Length: 228
Image 1 (cartoon, rainbow, N blue to C red):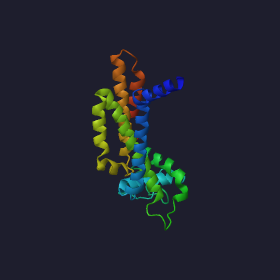
Image 2 (tube, one colour):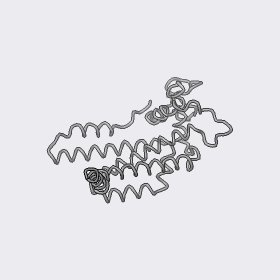
Image 3 (cartoon, rainbow, N blue to C red):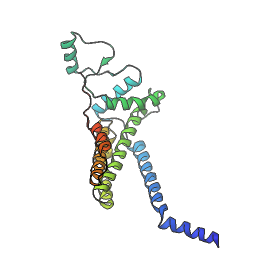
Image 4 (cartoon, rainbow, N blue to C red):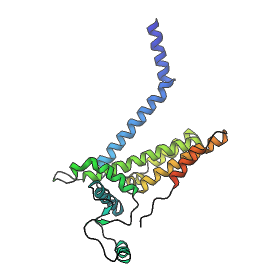
């Protein structure tokens, strides 16, 4: 009799209790992981955006221990060096164009793929490009999750699911997410700032302290450091 009661309690928890939300979360995470693997393995054909490739090669320079340098000679940097120091350096060229945050993220990923930096005749897609696209796609997925949380707090769960569902079925978002461009990181940071602001407003309405959430949103709102 006791065993039957336990079975009934388990079934009730499975159908209507706390297990329902857990199972839904597990299924959702499994679906996202499946889609992620399918997209990155079948849809990605290599970095095809020149600015994304530029950021990636700076990340590789950082991962190689050459510092924030580039293999690309830009007319603007050539003019700046000639104007300020009178000559243009040879060898590894200091980059004066790109903001540092995204290349540093690329370099952190590329350090784990050093064994695949040299392509073989069996490689159709450069493995390091796939690694960079993979982390960019993760940033996109995290951004969607954060914006879902924000929308649910501001409106309701149904509207948040509808909005995030429309984003997830848009092919343009997925394609852009695999370009390796820094905008993917900026969207994530912007989403986190919005979340912090929403939490600060909620705390203000409930007459609780808002300084922590406002401080976090202020840190995320700081503009990227300019390079001379």
